[in-house]
Length: 225
Image (cartoon, rainbow, N blue to C red; front, side):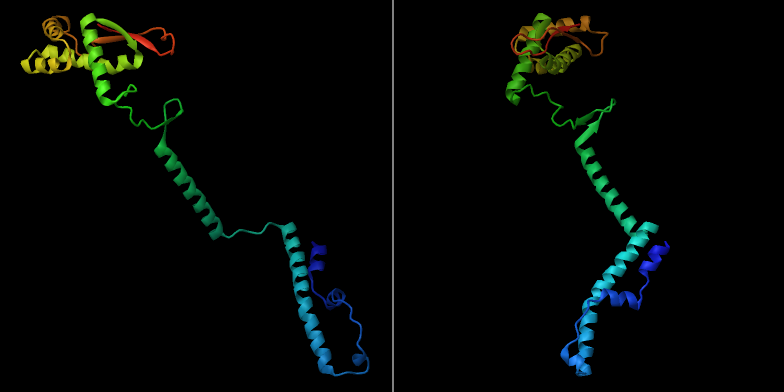
């Protein structure tokens, strides 16, 4: 610390040693005009002042850096902390809007378009497919299809059986508008009250089986309970 203090003090000797040496001009040797000598000294001092200031600042900063780190103002630190937290909160809120986290901690995307199983078909073709599958299941009691199709048709089969349990003419006409074959509708309305009179929902059962050979599609049996 004493070495740094002695190096940082300003003296006239250090100023003279830092200044470049000038050769005396003939006019100065002969006793030239004192105004010129004063102007030259002023120009020389102005040119040497930045060098002296930089050397003094570097020495003092090195001493202070060795002694202790420069304190950061509370306003600067508070502004940096606020900008960091605000940017983090914006990014985190943006991520939470796009993704979700399940019970196991896995990150999942939002469930857009999951309410209706599209089955890779337009709306009219999908409706016709589900009507055909429902008709075949009510006719045979058990069919084999892909697992997504079985899950998609399950609610329509349960809905038809619930209509048959009601037994009114209005429900019968609604079932005739959905099921393709009339005799299946009449048989359904005749047998359902005795078969599912005590059961409230859960009229079907899905049994997974081996994948389909060729495209490896997941297959399943769906049957009436």
